[in-house]
Length: 155
Image 1 (spheres, rainbow, N blue to C red):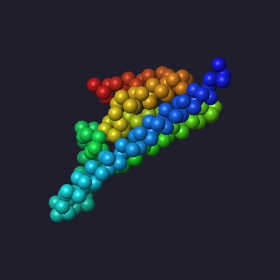
Image 2 (cartoon, rainbow, N blue to C red):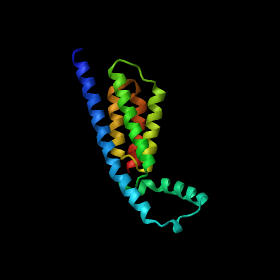
Image 3 (spheres, rainbow, N blue to C red):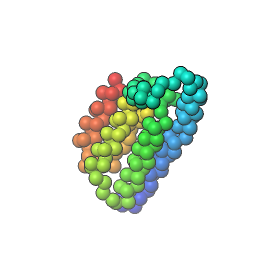
Image 4 (tube, helix red, strand yellow):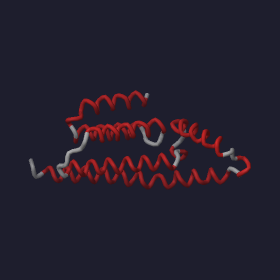
């Protein structure tokens, strides 16, 4: 039974790495689409700096209703960093290191924010949370609550 643990850990790391890499290649199209939209707006139409900052805040709050191509580059970067952090977490666990529950809670909050802003699908967030539940049984209750919150966002 013990000889299976390294293989299982390796499989987990590979799956997370694959998911992270697949998500890493998606933003290139989204950023190109966003840049094309920015080019189409002439400078004379753009608002002054103070107004553009408030519009940016409004746009971020509306990202949840936008298609994936319209998600801002900053949110895409945050999502990619989240995937990398999940991969590092999995790697540390597979090598016998302990993970701080506060760190996991912070990751889950970041993940929920990205779901609310439309940079991460609810299904992906639920899958990552279920994966964490499997590899971190000591956090099962808090992860169950978090999964319930995500499912409420889904409906």
